[in-house]
Image (cartoon, rainbow, N blue to C red):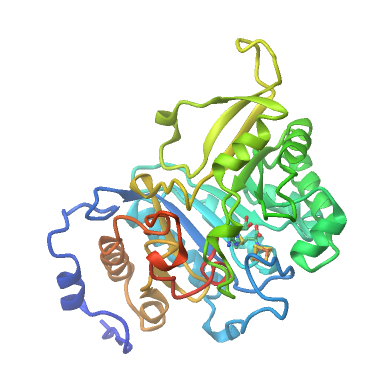
Length: 374
Ligand code: SAM
Ligand code: SF4
């Protein structure tokens, strides 16, 4: 048997045993707070073709050098380890912008062919800005992509250009329509509302989404932008969003017990004054990451485009799986290190803990959103 070359930086068996002291002997990704991660977020690139002001500066960021990114085979191998050894059942591709990854269709097809150790299929989904999706939606559907979240903060092209610093509104609309036409669904539309920019647009976005058969998800802006410009003063809260939507619609809370690990509080939507026993027009979700964090139900594990495992979006540390892969580690060794990383998961991210909520009450994560994978 060839010896495993263990690169510097990759934990050895002793380090893994120390990091997992007290961990129950189960195959899954458990943590000391009793949570099990089954939902894997994979960033395929840190690059993006938009420059949303709440995410990155106008000039972009220092992108990762190509050699540091996992190649397609490495991504697929890590996803396979997560599914076959660690019980992951959902894989969401994100970035940066995942559509900038040429091998995306191949990676999705390889993912949807996987089965967990007890024979369960894997759901593959993607979060995207939808630029270029019109040309790739059919191939992605054929590769088995079932669900998609498209980010769209406004229905007004001039606002879109101001928020994203690119004049590409029509391309996003074409992309989302093509995804629905290709049978990818449900289509969810992610919107971040910014004070004085688009915070008046929640009812309009919801009306548009309902008419098209999409599900709107409004996300509270989080202090995870690259520039560190987030401020509590600027936050449009989940309560603000619900109040704004209730000026135009009746919202009925979905049973919180049915929410599971999902980040969104969802509501059934009816026209104002409609019979509450009538069929709803659809649903809307509000993600209160700052004002009502949902850490206790978190079932997520994250892999960055350069092969680092993060147990939380807001983690201040990461575990290097790329070094293990490139050093010749076996699948079992990779799985052990991944389990150890998740056993180090903090109980909560702490973003909303101080009252009033400030960004200073918690340690900022070591990377910004686009370099982690949102
Ligand atoms: N580029 C893709 C997109 O925009 O959908 C995928 C990556 S992006 C980082 C994933 C999601 O994170 C998007 O829905 C985006 O709106 C959201 N996002 C980015 N920065 C955010 C912030 N500071 N607070 C809340 N959500 C943010
Ligand atoms: Fe790009 Fe998505 Fe960040 Fe916007 S939110 S800049 S589309 S990565």
